[in-house]
Image 1 (cartoon, chains in turn yellow, blue):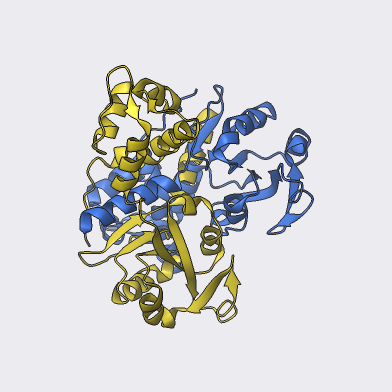
Image 2: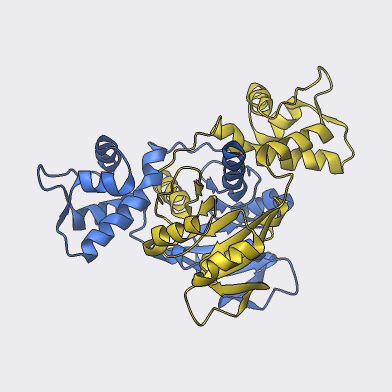
Length: 210
Length: 210
């Protein structure tokens, strides 16, 4: 399994909220936004804001702050969000269908082109306007659509098998929404999301409070 | 804003994957599961497994491992997942609709009873068999359904306003899927999920790889 080391992961994770805030400043026709304002809005320490934004290469000007347009460009470039990315959803179950229809992902430049499933009742139909193909058609459809990302939402028991199929078809980035850690060869990156972890945290907080 | 400190948050976040694995052992009619097996399956160090499971109060037996049934009960009790919890979804947009239909949440004992929106075209209709009510009806519906959790999926610009309404209606736990940090009074817990953070990580890993 590849361990892809990301520099300053917590800073990277905060960049989308910076981006959102700075885009709002742009919509408000502001030329600069101060680190202090950003810090207040996001409830962070000003020194943390400076440190986080350093990774984008943009430096604030004394008394003025960060140049809004350059900062937007720099964050988007750093995250690779300056170019739209095509994705396939693997598993047209409830979560796969959910993500296919979630407009929030489009804002990041993520364009889902198609979904794949093994259920004959789903194949050939559409979910949120996307075609649902047989998983056996993956190879061919990868050549056709040229997606960079696969969003994995199959049942956990099939997660590794599906990941192997994806890798074989040439997919180099997997966004894993199953609860299984998948093994992939070097050169393939995996980002794991887990709603159950968040719900576990909520449950414990609720217990503590009582 | 309340800062609810959860002891050993990373351990808590890993408990759902332990639970899933131990439930599989139960389905396979195993009486015990060894820490080493758990460690291998989840790609963790055995010492980490021991440490994580300590918070549930269950101790492994030498040479045998952890008693499967007791461990399941203990994890579910620790997470508060031994009792089903009712929830409202606030915001019947794409993500709210997605989560309402996501069966993965039912496995954790989360029962979504109703959705709320301000869009007249959605009110009075159903999403995945759930009624969609007007946000103004929240007070009354909280009394009627007695939900413990609100899942917040409104557009970010309305997140704080919606949170205020929820708190006023007596909701004590908010699962926040907006990209905004919301402020709540003491006694109300908030767990924030952010898909854009995960997608940011994926984007950076993809850039590094190239």
